Image 1 (tube, protein in one colour):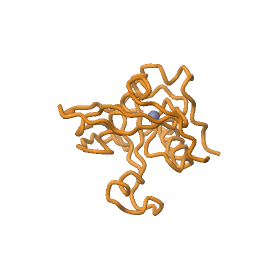
Image 2: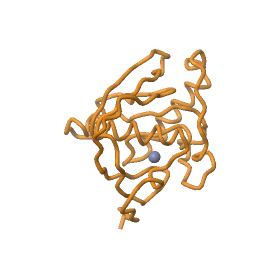
Image 3: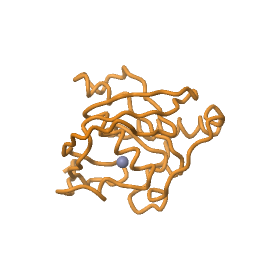
Image 4: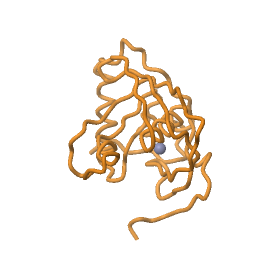
Length: 172
Ligand code: ZN
């Protein structure tokens, strides 16, 4: 069983998450948390990314599912081809001035969807799971994910800034 994904009223989702000391990244404790995040993400059919507070840790870590890269390439997302990518202590930069309204949902705000105004492009600098510094530029879906996940680490949920929120039960 993977860890439960906490839902919107959980206090941990409203905290300012803490940086992981860089020398701790390769420790068994942090590596275990990263694995728990990947497992929890994999347990959700519609999940493209997850932040550590969503499984109860107030740490600045998020994981982007390999599925995201398949979706962006127009490939079958059910075929596992790309690895999950881990971002630790992420810092956003180069947010494009151009913003677009994007459809958004969240594994911690089940069944609710809305539109959020996001920069079309964004860059993230972070440590990867081996403790190496990485910088990754993105546009579209991945840029949206960078912004949504960084918000989680700052205690912000998409419903705080969304418009046209509606509840959709996709299983009906
Ligand atoms: Zn979310």
